[in-house]
Image (cartoon, rainbow, N blue to C red; front, side, top):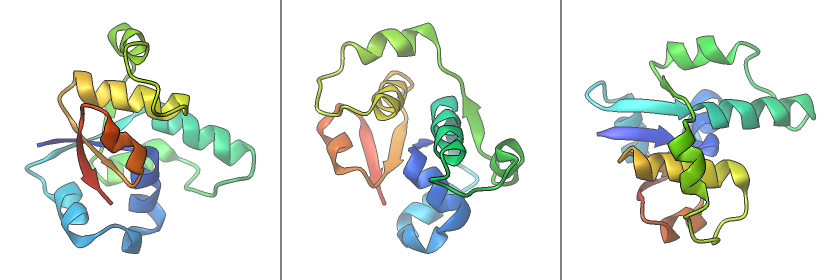
Length: 125
């Protein structure tokens, strides 16, 4: 299975693992699954950290690598797909991650209930 961690799932996997249900944590840690982190999440985290709204490891790349998370870059097809999504969700970071999960046939790991309205597989946390 290919999993894409939403920003909240990514943060919780690094600093609040107890908030992730056992089944979801098992899927994230299962080495037979490919777990991805979007560059969009890293961007969102850096913005929030710069504003003092979030404290995380200073070297995100090493933190991702320590958990064997692969990077998912943003491509032009991802950017174009955002416009085709229904406007259920207004957050631009989430809309891009939804587009990526949809186009790449990934299961999106998230606690965001609005995301379930989109045509993308979701693993709820």
